Length: 231
Image 1 (cartoon, rainbow, N blue to C red):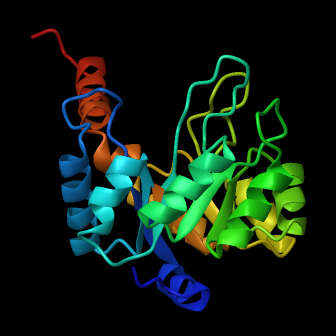
Image 2: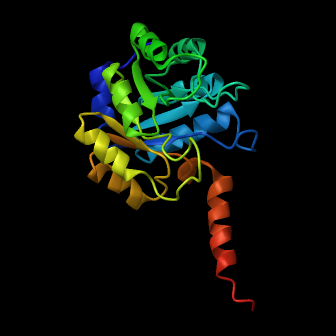
C-alpha cells in the first residue's frame, strides 16, 4: 500500500475540514459499507481528510478514498476512562489498516498505556500522531513528546457538565505556544468551523453534525418542540 508522506498529509489538511464519519454505536448506519459511503460522500463535498473509528471501518474506507485518514479505536474499559486508542496493539492495527494519522487519548488520567509509549510506537511505525487532549497542559506535554497534531478533542469531556460551545480559547492558547492544532469538539455549525480556522487551527474536525443522523434530526425536533404554539 502506497502511503502519503508527512509533508503531503500536512499540505492536504492545512485549513481544511476533517469529516469524522462515526455513526451512532449499534445504530442503523453502523456498518463498514455505510461508513465508507459516508466517507466517500464527505470527500465529494470537499473534506480534506477523514476521522474513522474501528479497524473494519478503516479498511472499508481506505479502499474508496485517497485523502488522509485519522484512525482511532474506541474501547470501554473497566479500569480506565480512556476510550480512544488505549492499547499499543490498537496503534499497530490502525497503521496496518491504512491510517495516515493515528490519534490517541492524550489526557492525564488513569490509563492502560502511557502517553509516552503511544507516541513512541506511532513514531516507530512512521505514521503521524495526534493526541486528543482536554487542556493546555496536556497539549503542551504531548507537543514536547513530538506529537504531530494536538487535538482539542477532549475539552469538556473529562468531568463536569459538557458546555455547548467549543473551546476556542484552548485552540488559541495552543496555537500561540507553537502547536499544530486540530480543533475538535462541538464545532457543529459551518460558522463555528470557520471560527476555528480564524483562530489559528491547522484544521477542524466535525463529526455529529455531519454523520450522525440520529443527533441531527433530534436537534431539529427539539427546536420545533420548543417553538410549538399549541395550535
